[in-house]
Length: 313
Length: 125
Image (tube, rainbow over the protein chains, first blue to last red):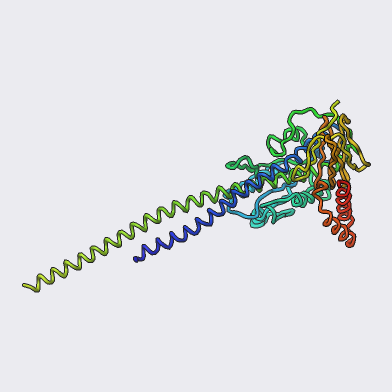
């Protein structure tokens, strides 16, 4: 076998092996998307009821709560960025990071100091490499987040927002995550969790939390609060933040799996194309080799015949 | 006035139970509260404790609920809990073990959780 042909054969073998791997990853991601989507759907009733309750307290009482009223002069904001632990998901992580950077820039232009909280190793690595300050990081659960994980993420954020700004607390809480629109479309979005914008809560279903699917344009009854509006709000808001973060984590996970599936599908397709091209080249090389051998034989034979014809004379 | 109310008991990650009921008893931070059809709109903070739902078919559903909210409006009652388990989902043996362990380790939180579970499980029998 000629050297050229051997090189092609070797490359075809290696591309075939890679193709098998990407194909397997594609199928794994596809099955995980379905699972993740189901989890998003399962968390919907809770998020929906909670959003309703928050809206009810927010509109139905005149309570002034630090978490619902905007600071007159907000100086510090927290940004929670949701990325994934693992890559191989196309532009999934870079899109989320880009959205977070734009938001940070905007907030800084408004004169706010930004604390960044990051979920997922990819985002942490990105920030560490650029030596930017990170307030807190959470890793290890982005593929299948549980409610306990959401609580863990929410705890320092809730603490930061309840603290006085002078003591290192923040006035605003933003979240950047990848919204799962459909199997083919996932968009990185940012939304402000706190302080609550009541009109936003009522229609949170439209953008931020489609899965939270808030009740739209419904007139809410006057509630009786047990024990009191303040206490209810005190207990409600942390749960609200947790549930929104949980929802965002789930959507982000579903988006990540969808992005992985897509990236792996195009990798598999590319590998297939590459194998085709390489096979053609290998065939041409083989043919060239045969042609060369034939012409060598023919050339040798005619040289022999010429020599014989010369000696006969 | 309708003689029954629609109840939805939802945990953070799933819907635990939903259906029609005639009476729901839950424990709020200021004491037990019973809700019957036609109650005034209500929003309350739940303690961890058993929730009893008297269904319209005459049966009783008991669930262990750990923290959360009760909200009632338009004859629709929602019980939101971070963790909620129906009495027949509760593994009594495990809850007992948990209770013993919590007592030994002096973990009052875990002890209460296990206690609520056990009480809900026995009430549901």
